Structure formats: structure tokens, C-alpha cells
Length: 167
Image 1 (cartoon, helix red, strand yellow):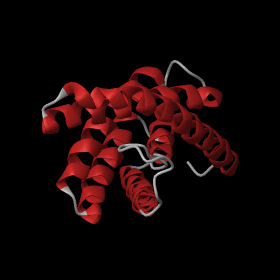
Image 2 (tube, rainbow, N blue to C red):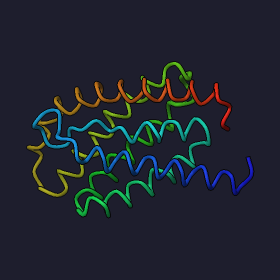
Image 3 (cartoon, rainbow, N blue to C red):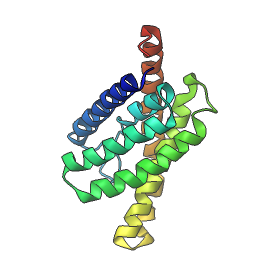
Image 4 (tube, rainbow, N blue to C red):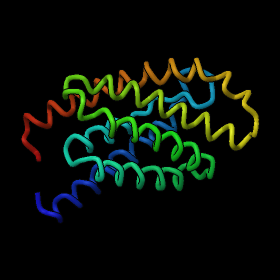
């Protein structure tokens, strides 16, 4: 793929991830626990990593986090998204090559746990009390559940994209 085509695809994937993020922010949380959300934009991060590579996926994620914070209008969104996104991305980078395309759900579930751990760490820095770690079991469970869901979605989307031979 040429450099221009790659850049255009990255811009498209970023726009899709940002759109998903903004729409998801309008959906009420499935449980009344701070930090629990579906994380559907991570589908695009996984797809980008598989199609274009880790560096490109990191760039798409970074731009989505920055622009998502602008659209959400909250500095705390930037802090929590960045902390969670960074840890989740690191886990994805470590694991994506070790699992096949039909096992992205495992990578995604572990990334979901890492994302919530990053958010908890950021929260401890903000509120300056370790009491927020009481949320850890709930956030770990939600990270697994939502991670499995987004991982399966990424698997099926990747399979469909391979059939269309878009890249």
C-alpha cells in the first residue's frame, strides 16, 4: 500500500473510531459504576493493528483519544481515556502477534482489563486515595465481558474485510 493510501485509510479508521466513541458516549452506562462502558471504538484499534500495524494503530488511537476528549468536552475524559488506552494498547501490542485472527477476543478481553486498570490508576492520582480500587473487581469483570464482545466483533469484521480484499 502506498503512503498516501495508508494515510487515507488511517484517517478513515480514525473517523470511524471517533464516531463510535461519540455515539457510545450518548448511551447510558450498562451498570451504574463509573468507568464501565462498552469500548466499541477498540474494535477499530484492533482492526487497524491487524491491517496496518502497531505504529499505525497507536496513531489512530492517539488521535481518537485527543479528538474524543475535545468532543466530550472534558479534561477528565482525556486523562482517563489516555491512561486506559495506553495500557490497553500495550497489552494489544504484546499479545496480538501471539494469537491468531480467530482469537482476537482473548487479546481484547485482556486489553479491556488493562484499560480499566489504567483508568483506576489515573483515578487514584486524581482523587489521591486508594479507596477507588474497591471498584477493581467490577471493572475487571466488565473489562472481560466487554473485551470479549469487542474482540468477537473485531474478528468478524476482520474476516469480512479479508473476503472483500479491501487492503
